[in-house]
Amino acid sequence: MSMVNIEIDIPEHIRGTERERKLLDRIQKHALEQAVLELYREQEISTGTGAEMLGLPLHDFILFLGRHDLSIFPSTEEEIAEEMKNVESARKLWDRDRKDE
Image (cartoon, rainbow, N blue to C red):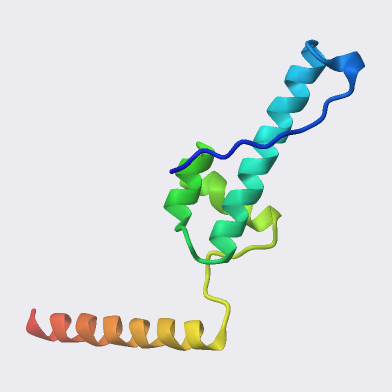
């Protein structure tokens, strides 16, 4: 992964203070979260990668996605149709394996 630097003007009266450090920490965290959300929304990263980037367990990342109105389930008709094909294929394999028992 690459590193991106963002320049932010901080008011003179908080430069070098604890308040500035806390503000910059929050900004950095928020920027990373927004980048991960956008990458996930554009299907550039998986749930596992998103969780890893944010340092979260997978379950917490899934909850994080939900808080931002993103689903781990397919959303377009084409994606749902593809998932249904996969489910049907898996069911047929399972049925076949059960007959062999």
